[in-house]
Length: 225
Image (cartoon, rainbow, N blue to C red; front, side, top):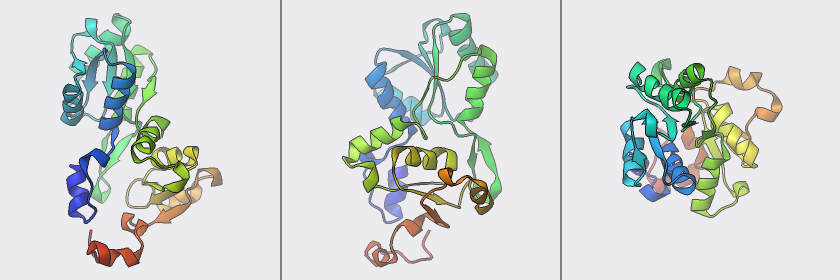
C-alpha cells in the first residue's frame, strides 16, 4: 500500500525498500524468537506478515509466548482477557508493541487511539511492562533501515510529525531530523520544546524535502499532493 501510494506520487518505491512496524516486528521475531507462539492484537497486515513468515499465532493463552500490542480498531474485552491470561494468569507471555503512538492524527483534527492505548490497558491489568518496541523511537527500526540501505545515519534525513517518535529516534541516532507540521506537532508545541529535543529542520509540508529543481524531473508541480 505504501509503495503503491509513493509510486503514484512520482517517487518509484519498490515494496522491498519500504519499512514500517509490520516489517520490523516480523524481522525482530524471526531474528530473536523464531519459534515463539504469538498473539497479535492488530490489524490484518501484521497478521498476514506473521503468517507469511511462518510465525505461529494463537488465541490459546496457555501456549502464547508473546503478546503483540498494535493498532487495532477491533480491540475488545475478549482480546484483553486473552492477553491477561497469557501474561498474568499463566505467567508465561511477555508484552511487546509495534509502536508507542498514542493516537493516529486524521485530516480535520480528528484522530483514533493507537497502540499505546492498548499497551496501557494490558499493563494496567497485568502489572507487566512492555519489554520491546519495534517502532519509533526505538533503535530497532532505524537499525533495520540502515541495514537495508547500507548507509550511515549521518548521510540521511529522518522526517516525521511527532517529536517523541521519529524526531527522537533521529536525534538519538545522530541523524539529521526534519519535522513536518502537517500532523501532530504544530508550531506552538515546537516552540515549547527544549533545544535538545528540537529537530534540525522544520517543514510545513513533506514535499519540502525535495529541492524545487528536482520537481521537473519528477513531473511534479507545487500544487501536487
